[in-house]
Amino acid sequence: MRSSISELSAKAVTLKPATLARAQEAVAARARALGFDVCRFASVAEGWEAGERLDAFVEAGRHGQMAWMQTTRDRRRHPCAMWEDARSAVVLGMNYGPTSDPLALLARPERAAISVYARGDDYHEVIKGRLKEVAQVLAARTGAEVKVFVDTAPLMEKPLAGKAGVGWQGKHTNLVSRDYGSWLFLGVILSAAELVPDEPEVDHCGSCTACLDVCPTRAFPAPFQLDARRCISYLTIEHDGPWAPEFREAVGNRIYGCDDCLAVCPWNKFARDAREARLAERDDLKAPPLAELARLDDAAFRARFVRSPIKRIGRERFIRNVLYSIGSGRVTAALPEVEALLDDASGQVRGAAAWALSRLDPARFAALAERRLTAEPDPAVRAEWEAAA
Image (cartoon, rainbow, N blue to C red; front, side, top):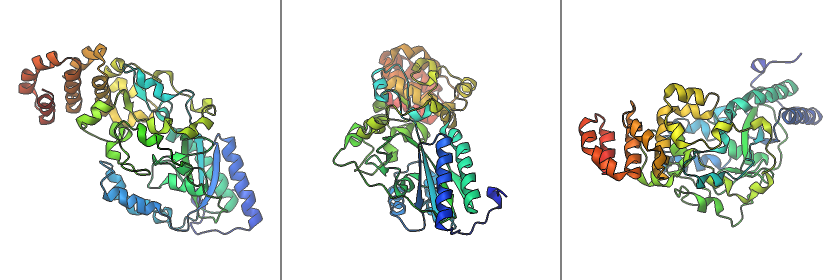
C-alpha cells in the first residue's frame, strides 16, 4: 500500500542496490514529467565547507538586515543540523533562462527593469507543488521520510546543488550550470534514505571575472564573496528604509532584483533557447513605465502583483525603489508622479520622492524645501530634504 509522507519513519533507511536504483530512476522520471530540467542526488551525511563560509559571511555583517540568517545560522550550517535524520538530498532544477538579454533594458531608463525570475508567477508556488509530487514518489519507493524545500527554510540549496553535480557556485556566489548557465530555480528534497550520490561538479569559471566586473555597486569584495549590503537585489527586496546615496545613483532602472552578474556569464549561451512556456513572463512585467508604477496605491499594487513574488515586499518598499530609479535615471516625464508622492502616507516614500525631485528639478526642490521641512513630521524625511538641499 502506498504510504503518505506523514506516516513514514524518520529513521535512516538503507535499501538493496537494485531497489535503490529503481527508486531513483522513478524519481528522475517523475521529475522530468513534471517539467524539471535537472534531477540529481547527493549525500548529506558528511561535513562540508559551506557552514564555515556562512559563519564568515554573518560574522562580517554582510547579511545586512537579513536577521533570519543570524537567528537560523546553527540550523542552516548543515542539512543534518536542521534535520538530524537526513542522509541524502534530491536536487531539482528548472530552467528559467530569458529569451532575450535582460541587460538591454538598462538602456531604457524610463522603463522598469524587473529581475527575470520575478516576471512571472511566484516560482515558490510554481515549483513547490511539483516538488511534493516527486517527494511522494521517493517516499513510496524507499519507505523513508522526506522533507521538501524551495528557498523558504534554513537550507543552503546552492552548496547541495554543487554536491549533486547540478552546477557550481561561481564567483558571483550564484549557481552556474554547464547546461543552463545562471538560470536555474532550485528545489531540494531531503530524505532519510541512503541514496546513491551523483558526482559533484567542479568550478569551471577559470580566469573569467565578468560577473564581478559588471556589478554596478561593487558588491563583491573578492571572488566567491558577496557583501549583500551593497547588492541591488538585497537593497530592492530585503532592505527596509532609505539607501545610501551611492546606491541610489547606481541603481538605474532596476526596481526589483538585479540580473547583471547572472546575465553576463558566458555559460548562459547554453541556456538561451531552453526556456519553455511553463515559466512565461507576464507582459505587464517585462518593461513597465516607471511613471505608471509610481501611481500605484496599495490596492492597485496588490492587484497588479497577485501571484508575483514582488507582492511580498509591499507597496511602500516597492514605490521607494521606483522613485530611486526615477531619480537615478533622471526620468523627468515622471515629475508629476514624484510631486504627488511627496504627500504619501509613508515616510519612506515621501523621503524617496524628495530625493527624486532633487534630481529631476533642483529649482523646484529648492522652492519647496523650506515649507516641506517645516511641515514634515518624520525626522528621516526631513533629513532627506536637508541632505539633498
